[in-house]
Image (cartoon, one colour):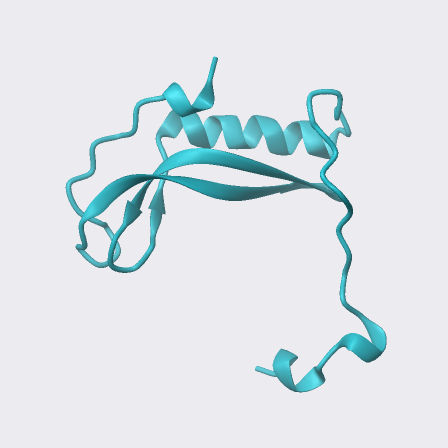
Amino acid sequence: MDINDIKMKPFEKCPICGGELGQKKVEKLLRGGKHTAVLRINAEVCTHCGERLYAQDTVRYFEQIRNKLRRQELSEFQPLGQSFEVTGNLTDKSLLQA
């Protein structure tokens, strides 16, 4: 099944701000355990606030991916470089204060 073929739930307006919605291909980051996966997937996106709305089947697919990442079942994933956490001298403490 191609996840991009899943039909979107027909929302008429953004539930956050009431703005117009349009279908758009977006990049979604999913985390599971110490792993992260990147998907390029269709979503309904508000043209005013940027809120993304996903079909229920798409959300279930996200959870399947998160579970595979948590269980380290990585055979279906293509490596995409490395990820790093900024720590030590590179951390600008003034940006992290609330």
